Image (tube, rainbow, N blue to C red; front, side, top):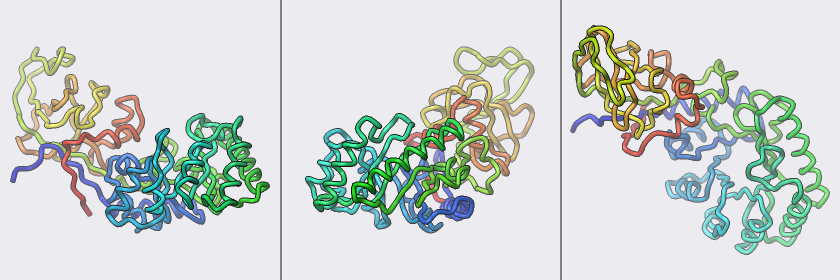
Amino acid sequence: MSTPLRRLYVSASAITANVKRLRELAPARDTMVVVKANGYGHGAEVAARAALAGGASWIGVADIDEALALRAVGIDAPILSWLHAADQDFVEAVARDITLGVSTIAQLNAVALVGRGTVHLKVDTGLGRNGVGRDNLDEFLTVAARLHDEGLLVINGLMSHVSGTSREADLGQAERFVHAHDLLVSLGVTPTHLHLAASAAALDHPSLRFTMVRFGIAAYGLAPTSDHTDLGLTPAMRFEASVINVKRLQPGDGVSYNFRWVASTETTVALVSAGYADGIPRAATGRASVEIRGTRYPVVGTIAMDQIVVNVGDDDVAEGDAVGIWGDRSAATPSVAEWAEWADTITYDIATGIGGRVARFERP
């Protein structure tokens, strides 16, 4: 059997260790690890099991299909899903004990119609995305409290999400969150779970941890911002490809589309079997590097759909050599953060962008 051209190795033990470390850094009564978008590219089932082994008490996903897929493979921990279609059918989610983040009165009524579904009320405290807005907050909470009192649904939590714009902005959002909580309590409902802070806010602002924190990107060993690079976390993902051709170029020879790189001296280039269809960002053209045999080499020429070209100079590189595209910097491999910088984007974008033809493997 031949070696797959493109390979993603994911370490469950790294995720487990990261979650344990994050619980030390940002302790709360409950810890949720978010495994949406296929576990931030790492594999949702692998990530969920590893997170629970590290002490997570909740799993978070964006949509119900992601939650049901975890139930189908035997994940029985509490799962929260918070992004729903306008005509969402909540029957199966309620039957499979999925907790639902709800943001509109229509969603409240749809859950109540099923009966006895468990919800976390989502409030927009200033991020301007999902969650009930300030103009509808009083009515939303009043309806929610009535349905809870009638036994048509169970309000188990209150949630929001900070913007991370500044410390002042995040603390201001916390004030609005507490206001929403106080309104709900005045209506006779005291939610068990209060959560506002994701990775960065949970690490930076102890007062924002309330009863539960949510860890996403940090659980995978990737820094949520450039201010969080020394947390003792281990990247859980290594992306590799293979050298599939090696050739010698002469001065003046161009590489890839539009000859955005031309050899100035005689040199050897290696053709590598991965491109932007596999998650290597084309925007990193002219800035990226990769690792071969423990040494970094520059990627030259335009990053193509299926392949990149690497300038190895006069070094000995052979067809079949493994190419570290990103992973743990301690092994000389570029980090996800470096690729994000080269492509002028964020680590989340790089990690979740792995293409469907990349073969996946678990490693210790």
